[in-house]
Length: 341
Image (cartoon, rainbow, N blue to C red; front, side, top):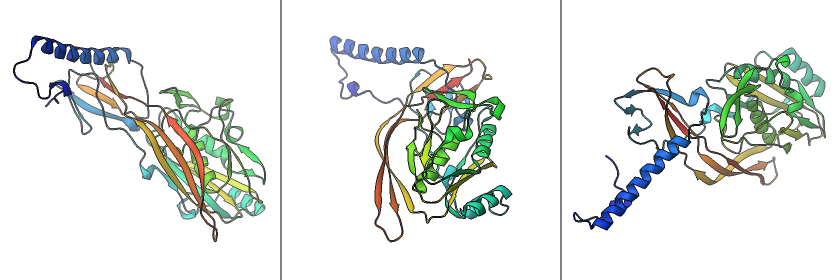
């Protein structure tokens, strides 16, 4: 049942002609703005298939658990997406895929460096990847595995896993461009950056350079992601410990694992996030002749969010120390409602 507009509340059966004309004009203005917005918002936005749901479109009404769409309106609000905890998280030694069958190179480097203690490990699930994203993540993980960072040295992720060329094995994958997601060479390697960022923070290492994505990602909460772009954005950290560090990474079974080994006792680190602003997103409904007749595709969007992130760090026998990691603002990704003509 349609909701009654605010200016219609309390109206008596008898309305003066001037009032009726004013009310009709307001209704007409709202409808015109909706139609105008729907015509100017035709940008095609591609996103991960995990955010896409195919549903039936029957008799002008979309049947879905998310919403009920009225056929005569082009502007709607839909539930926004948020990361699920099972898609990311810190891991123990036993949860790493190489725990029962350790690679020879890893064993050799640990013995050589004395880096036998797991400082921190983090995992990210790559669900329903786009293009050849899994190839890129696997290639980047293989370049990262075996990286040694000496005391006082600053490590650059771009220098470790780049340059991002076909000659180095990279293929086309998803990349944020403005508020769009398009296919580019080596797209998807930002998952390595985000995974490494969480590992570095948990190890209480010094973050020298880190950039958030333009929009929220689907695999870690806002404020805990990192993006890289060759020649423009890098993720860099400094080994501020007195002993060498060893990085190991692997992509297997649709999940990315990054681990940090060293000699020191790691602290207990906890993440704290405060949301300052959230802007609910809009949705765009449009015709797509490529869809089979009677079907509709929903590309779920993401709210615009501004968050402040900080961590608490506790070493054994020492008081808790709180550190601000900054404020990140993410643009909105609108919902796209596509239906067959």
